[in-house]
Image (cartoon, rainbow, N blue to C red; front, side, top):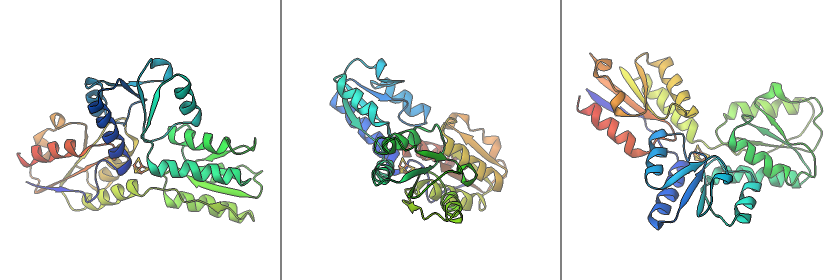
Length: 280
Ligand code: F3S
């Protein structure tokens, strides 16, 4: 059975950077915590814990040492609170997320009504919103999941930023809806294309193989979305977290099996699965 990997699969730049920062912290030997699970990957979170980096729900659970901020970023107040408590912050915020935070803050400080296109309640959106709110002089910062959620009372000047993992189509639809109202939004396209690259290459691969294995945490929304995309094109698609879950019977009669992985899946996990499939 041939094993074919998707062209883009696995840990994105921001996740790999956060992992590298965490592993470097382990080598330094300082007590350290991550604020929330570092990535949506139970195996990695467990392995970090085994090596001395536990995930804390909040700063209240951390008495000393280093606090690693994950790639989604945090609200600025958390950084200030960590300093007040004498904790050392190690900022693993993805640079693409940091760019969205500063774009939102700069639009707000220029006096714009800031509209953030993204998923309400997502930690990345909470961070971006807080950065904008800190500079908005009390003007509300809006978060909309789609154009239909835009409130009626938006006034010029309007600035738009977007969650890094949103689609360009959704951003364009929100901007078009604002323009239809006669507004001239200042748009900062802060989308990162890692997610789309993984989705497009998974879709392409799913059309070329007999079966497909999608690797990633079941709590990872980007992996679940990859799985949906694959399943829609290749009925024999399977979502796994580790190779022990693979049942060889899935591949009876298959000439080629594809492999892809979510943006929170490290390369080592992909390699283990590929080797296992090649051994079947
Ligand atoms: Fe960063 Fe994009 Fe990954 S924003 S965390 S490189 S999906």
